[in-house]
Amino acid sequence: MNVNEQTKVLKVHFHSLKQKFEKGEKPENPKDKALFSQVKNETAPVFQLLEQWERDVLQLIKTRKVNIHPQQIISTRENMELLLMHSYYLDVRRKRYMELNHSVLYILDQLLAELD
Image (cartoon, rainbow, N blue to C red; front, top):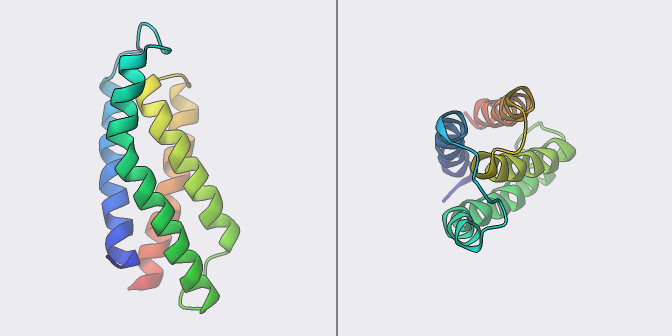
């Protein structure tokens, strides 16, 4: 899968995570092992995709095929990981969640525009 496809798949994941955050209810016990297992199973593929995406984009930056600063990509991955967890545990205010979400989507859109 190329970077363009990876980025589009990530955008789809994060739109569904946003819906999960907005419609979800805070877990009764965030330390529940069943919840942890569920979250781990559902997010593992996304974490793997994020890792691959970051490597691939940083490689494109090294070869100067995209004009984005490497630190933006690293920060975007970190923000994506935060969004993954916040979407399940609902442990952050909506305003902070939306700031992270907009930040991530801005970089993803910028990357897609650079690739086209």
